[in-house]
Length: 238
Image 1 (spheres, rainbow, N blue to C red):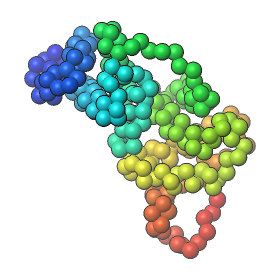
Image 2 (cartoon, rainbow, N blue to C red; image 1 turned 90 degrees about the horizontal axis):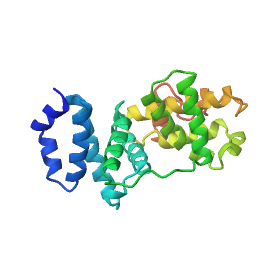
Image 3 (cartoon, rainbow, N blue to C red; image 1 turned 180 degrees about the vertical axis):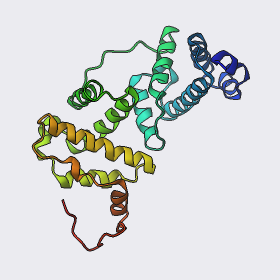
Image 4 (cartoon, one colour; image 1 turned 60 degrees about the vertical axis):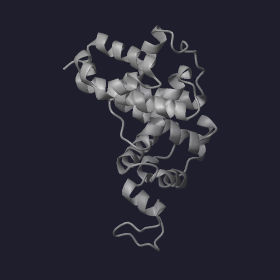
């Protein structure tokens, strides 16, 4: 079943075209029909569109203000609660493209990247070009490594020299319970990968990746519960 067939029967689509974002929904649906998307992709894209618009407007923005920046913040918010689907980012890029073609939202503005964004951008290029990771995986690594970098190195690359095992472990323990167990595991994996990259490229002199605790241990510590086999009075070995 393709997008056109699905849209004729979809209760979700009928609800959207009678809701507050009806014009956006019609334009987006037409874009998916023209591209011949399948049923599951169309359903997922419409569900994502509904959640994005509810979050965007609920956060105090007008629908017409939608931009890449809002999409990035929405995905970061969503990733705290659900694991991302491999097509989420491309689905929302398709949405922005369709809305701009119809003049419903402003054209994209050139954005000057911050130092943190530049560092993460080079990391993403490394993952893609040298490690051969899929675009969806690279996207999730960018989001999580950027969040890590902003908190532990607020001054940018100048803060690399001050990174210690205590800082890394503290970050993981603070954020171990931010979302689901799966998102916690993903966060730990990305922090390890980012620290390995920094050490490999000579940005840090100490191999800090091995200091990242497992999500189970980090969760126990953030909850003040000793992990199985751990002495609750024992000192942390770095």
